[in-house]
Length: 251
Ligand code: 13P
Image 1 (cartoon, rainbow, N blue to C red):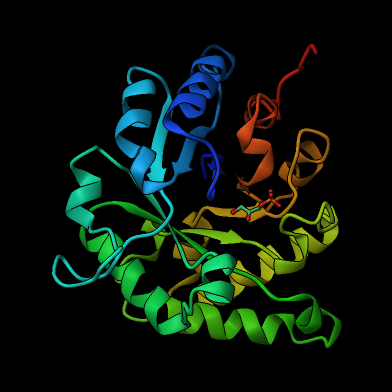
Image 2 (image 1 turned 135 degrees about the horizontal axis):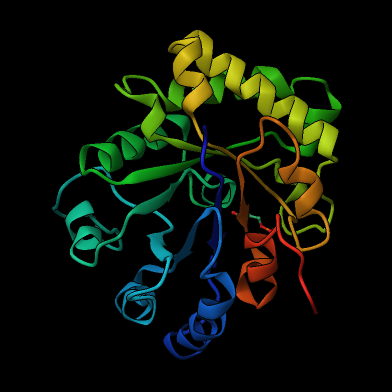
């Protein structure tokens, strides 16, 4: 009942030229995907990538968005700017933004609500650090993040959640299938408590953190894992293998 959703997060990688070339390479490889497919790209690449992906099943997303409609916010991007190019998805609250750019649960909440109000889908990221996992406070951290980040959201089924354990991002250290399943099941349960159990059953929850062609099958086989948010493996052809996680792939 939940349609799987595989999204890439290019972060601060690619150029208009290399990005368009990758989309061209990926297009025939992902066209028969059974899941929804998106690439979230740096804001400056959105016009060119939208053009490159025209007529394909690859949706183009953004990596961040400001909560105000317009104004004196140097360096920020508004909902209207994204919508002008048909952007459908916006990553909000990625741990790199929380870690390096002062993003807090309060700003994540404001951005999430603004994306929803603009009719787009936030891919809202949550996840614990290594210290937090080792100290046994993973659920406590996730509970706080979900409670504050989703506060005042009217329809939680319109939010995609990406569970990205910070210790698994860019480290090559993926959560085991069991760890990812257990934690995502907790996230679903918490959403059920905050909203309603029936809504929680409808929420798409992705796993993110060193997900690749080799480990995607096992992760996607878990009952609560509905997709992936892919960093480095979305910068190459390998992304198509992840999108086709449920199909036989000839190298
Ligand atoms: P990696 O796949 O490079 O670990 O990045 C994951 C991520 O942060 C996606 O948002």
